[in-house]
Image (tube, rainbow, N blue to C red; front, top):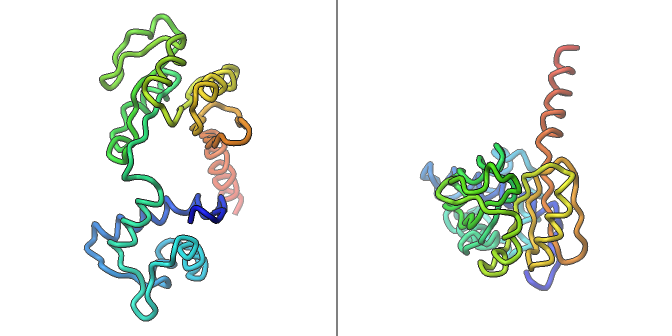
Amino acid sequence: MNQKKISSAVIHRLPKYYRHLGELVDSGIQRISSRDLSIRMRITASQIRHDLNQFGGFGQQGYGYNVGSLYKEIEKILGLGEKHNMVVIGAGNLGKALAHYQDFKARGFNIEGIFDNNEKIIGEKVSGLTVKSIDELPEFVREHHIEIGTIAIPKTEAKKMAKVLVDNGVRQIWNFAHTDLHMGDGVVVENVNLTESLMRLSFMAALDKKQ
């Protein structure tokens, strides 16, 4: 797997496989065919086989996939059995909501610190963490071996803060600012635009009204 380049489309589908397989495990289902999994996930069976073959296949002809084993294998591929230290930049409503989300820790994503430049917020407690000044960010990132930086601030400051993260060794950025960030080679940015998601729903709602 390390010797081949996995497409971004496959990488984006892996969490979906993991979620659906987890639901099957919880339901007590022990095996499933690519056809049945395709119906459940609304992805073609051939696409499923192609995706999983990127990592070794895992299926058996005439048997399908062992649900529990495949679930654990995808968990390893996604690195969910490892610990990933994170910081949240921005202690507004969104930043606080992210810090409070308990499922992150269950998946190995540990939020080690939360930062803001608002003196009225600095010192507050958020999910057991004390909001720190942005000025403390560089040293904190280095000392706590932060892997993932979460940006939940206005777009005017987003690129500046992303650069601070990258300059201090962070190579994965989860960006919620209302702007797409591109930080160059060696840095992976996941741009999440909540407004665009709502706009897509708005389009479908408007279309539905016209029919």
